[in-house]
Length: 322
Image (cartoon, rainbow, N blue to C red; front, side):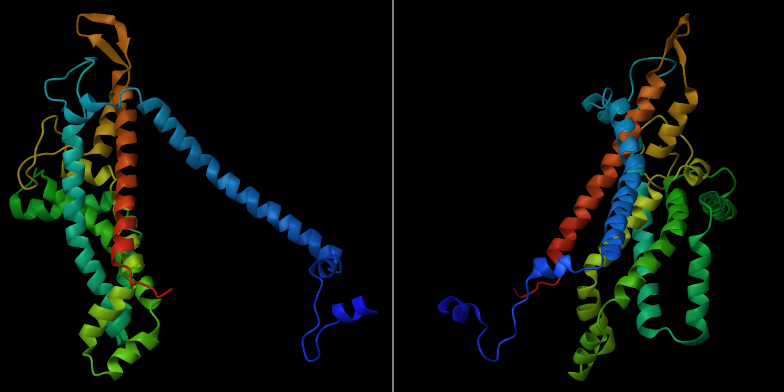
C-alpha cells in the first residue's frame, strides 16, 4: 500500500507518461514509413558524397606526387617539351591577383545593390534591378569574357591582354551571386531590430551599417566566398582576356598573366609529349602530372579561403549572451 501511494502522482500535477509504452502504441504503418524515409535520406546523402569523394581522391592521388616546394615556387620560363621541370608560381600569382581585384570590384557593387533592394528599393526600378540580376546570373562565362575583351578593345585597341581585363570579366560573373546571397542574408535580419533602432532616433543609413550589416555579416562573408569559389576556376573568359604566359607578372595592368585554370587546361592539352626533341621514342607524362598538381593547388586555395571566411565570421559575428 505504501508503494502504491509513493508511485501515485502528486495532487494537481500532470500524470507521468511512459515514453516506451507510447512508442509501442504508434501505428506500425507510420513506423515503417519513418524507417523507410530515414533509409532514403541516408542513401541520398551517401549518393551525393560519392562524386565529391571520387573527385577529391582522384585529384589528390594524381597530384600529390608533383606537389612540392619546387613546384610551388618556380614558373614555366625556359621549360619546353618533356622537361621534368617548371612549376606554377606564376599561375598562383595571376589567380590570386585577378580574383582579388575582381572581388574588390564585385563586393561593393553587389552589397550596395542588395542593400538597395532590401532596405530602399520600391517600385519599377527595384523590379528592373531584380530582373537584370536574374538575367546576369545565367550569363555564360564565355560571354562575360567576350564583353570585357570587347570593352577594352574599343578603349585600348584590339589584341589587348592583361589581368585587369580578366578581373572585369570575372566581376560580371561575381556580381549577381553577391547580390543574391547578400540580399537573402539581409532579409533574414528581423524587422524588430530595425524598428527598435529607428524608434531611438537613429538615422536609417546608420541602422543599416550598425544593425543590419552587423547582424548579417556571417552570411554576407559566406556569400562572398561562394562567389569567389564560383569564379576562381573559370577558364574560358581568362583565355580570351588574359591570355597565356610562362613568366611571372605581378602587374595587373601590363601584359599577359597565367592563372591556375588556364595552366591546367594548357598542360592537359599538351598531353603525352617527347622527353626531348632528340629522343622521340621516350614519351613523358610530365604535362599531365603538372595539370593534376595545379588542380590540387586550386582546390587547396579554395579551402584556405573558406577557412579564412569562417575565421572572419567568428570574429565579426554579433556575440550572444549565454
